[in-house]
Length: 395
Image 1 (cartoon, rainbow, N blue to C red):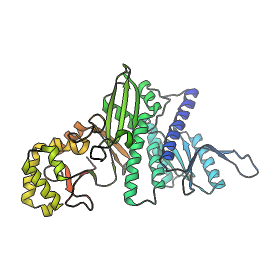
Image 2: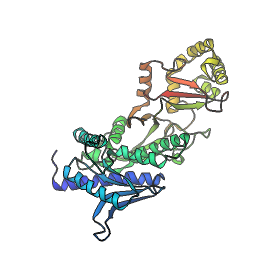
Image 3: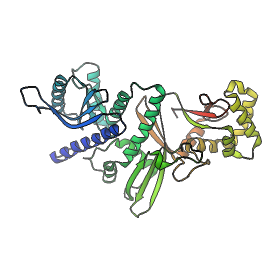
Image 4: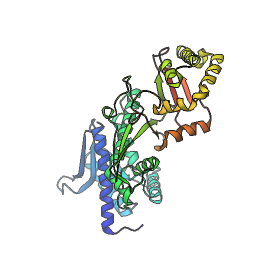
């Protein structure tokens, strides 16, 4: 689609505004020491503002990255960025990386052009002082990965999980995303717009009837369960409609690069209370598994019995495990009605309603233990005290 010069300018500013919002989130998360917009530098004895990058980011270890934005694969523009990148690195050795960032959710043809050019750099077909051409999602992950590179495995997983929840809340609250969706403004790039669009469409929102969207990942606002534990809701979304009414939408975020991710951890008696308080056989078998902690020690005969006892509760168990439904808590804000899955390996995400997700698991058949989709085990150092359930990440 052809842009006027005014539209091109507006499109470029939109991309920079979106990247600024991403960088500010990274700063708020503690990943960055400083974000410097419109960074300029020069060679001694010459114009000290000759070379330019829309953003310079500074990490806590002193490393600096220069970032450019692009909305189309214009050769003249890229050559200008290359010249700036060459000289910025020459002037300041602390500038260790330079990235060119394009918006998520852009036209597929344009995205493929960026990917092809980046591959030429990676394969050393073309010499480049720009380290890589990446998407908004990629730069978010790259900044996060560098900032936490010295953390332990457990700390890394905790930070990445919370970081993604914050990212989703910011995506849904970003005003430009809402305006782009409502008006189909081709000059607006949005911030991680593809994720925003997938989520609001999964919610079934009508763009003509939606006035505002605000979201939070703040645990203080979402609240804790009566037990003191965390609810299944990771992101609480508040939508206000044009008729003045409002509604909450609740999302559970699952982010992992592992084959399986832990999704549930409770005592055997709580399992029994939620599924069927009156089923003494089910309660006894659940406690026996809790004591054993694994399939081998639990035994084949007990496994067959528990499989039979659990069979009527498949949907109830799955909705409780993934969304908290049927357990303790506030159904309006603390039970997750949507599941958002993010694969660190591919950088891709998908969202499903809890009903869609459970139906998919049912249709796929049991891939875990006891006729369920879950792998049953025990949490570290809590054998005999709690049962932990894990789920394959490729569902």
